[in-house]
Amino acid sequence: MIETRELTKQFKDVRAVDGINLTVARGELVALLGPNGAGKSTTLRMLTTLIPPTAGNASVGGFDVVRQQREVRLRIGYIGQGNGAGHSQRGRDELVSQGRAYGMRVRPARERANELVDSLGLGDVADRTVSTLSGGQRRRLDIAMGLIHSPELLFLDEPSTGLDPQNRANLQEHILRLREARETTIVLTTHYLDEADSMAERVIVIDHGRIIADDTPQRLKAKHVGDHVILGFTAEHDAISAARTLHAERHGTEVRVTAEDGPQQAPKLLDDLSAAGLAVSSIEVTRPTLDDVFLTLTGRSLREGRAEETVEV
Image (cartoon, rainbow, N blue to C red):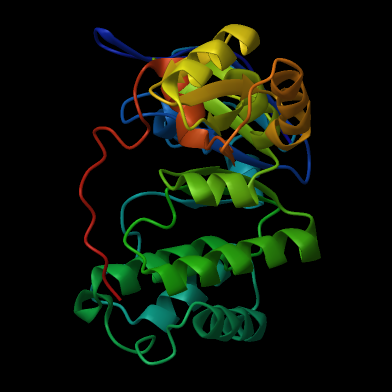
């Protein structure tokens, strides 16, 4: 569904995207993670024909993003970070107009608009002018506009920003239903690590315009961080002996062991310590997060530098 070769974008002295090679199969749900300025949004804007690449090439749905822009745009939905609806227009009318622009007949466009209004909780405000809506309501309207024609490929650039937890959950559910019903391919960027972890079957980490990791969330966490088995002891000298036995880190009376599968490794660790005559007073297994992965790969948290968000309903 998406294929790029050495895709590059240069803005004067800044190389925002630096030779990205990317393949996304039909029906995949892929999350792009990276800090502000990593090149995620620039990559999406090239793939959606909004800006041309400086070098390299890309095809979307089998069509070249430079030479066949119309064919690409007919097959995609794009929900960017800005607001797309006209301020003086009514929300429901904007949805119908958007559907008509994609070639839908009036009645199907109205039916689809009504469906999206209901599913995204816009029923009380859909017939108001856009300028009177709150930021969160406008965000939901933008999402509805991107979904109006049920695209085969959907790009979501931080879609949940500004939404309260309930509407975030509603949006995620709608996206997953859309994918299941229509086998929609979805590419999203997000700063919500739980969103990427729960929704995406594949996570791509971008930093300084390059892809630095690409795998399932589970394999990324296992490969780059691992589980931590934390063993507690009543006496510090026992902890010192346990750390030597296991070749592990010690902090006071606690010993921390990094393992690929903590729950599976914990019984073996206890057996090894028992054989050495060491009794464990407590045990805890902690699982890594995608933010831990990002910290390991880039040296900083994905949350660092993130702008403060005002949640509006």
